[in-house]
Length: 337
Image (cartoon, rainbow, N blue to C red; front, side):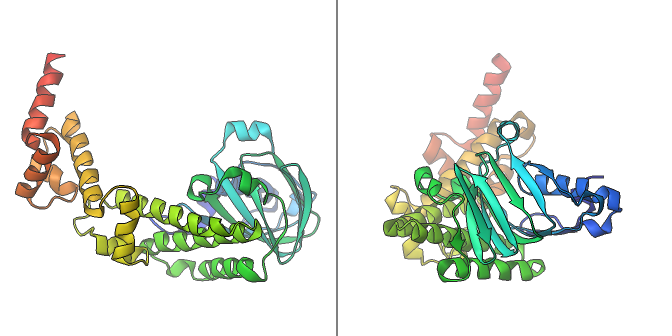
């Protein structure tokens, strides 16, 4: 049985929460289980400790979707992220490490630093590094995919392995907000995940912009992040017939006018983009032999076209022929091959 399966919690679609305590295991199994759990929850590392015989540690996980937050307590240890481990697995993540109690040393990105209680720092999981705590540590880790933080890599490099305040300014705001999420994790619904992810990403981007003294980066980052989140939101819900500009705007706490401006900047319209995404999904199903027994109108309904006549008209305008004829042409082409 894996460490993840030993953990308790709710692991389904949307927001996921879980807890793992080494105290629930026999003393001899605790350190190995902790290593397995943290490698799966974060990134693979090689770890060593003088407390392996009776390793007392806990981790609470909150997975919002693209962003994951962990609250950890553990005894002194040394963790290494080697070039070999990176070659084996590189999920492309930034880690924000917040020291809530104790102190921890980082050797990373050509720097060596100690992050004390009340401080935080950034780590690039695609780069080698060593993390050492010589006293028991209470830590919060925010895990963010790099492509969700649209900042130039050279700018982020300036922040790596540098202590930043976590008890004042934007650092305090971010830490407090994420801490509240952890406390109320089991009350969150899947619908909360996308909205809360957006807030966390905004706070991290603004914190970095402030620390790097790049004032223009704040507004640019917010705009790019918002665009990414909106497009992702539509792609995930494109089959929902109730998906409208008003629904999308409300989910992202913006006005419908702001939403339309986001698409206008890309030379698109909101409704046009939704329709094109739905038609693209319909084309894929119509071309899939596994869907040959499914009626054309059912394929349209699957992707948000609840009116068969409306689906036919939209498909004909986009592709020059009705969806039924489109499918027959593809089927005839397969038979001739």
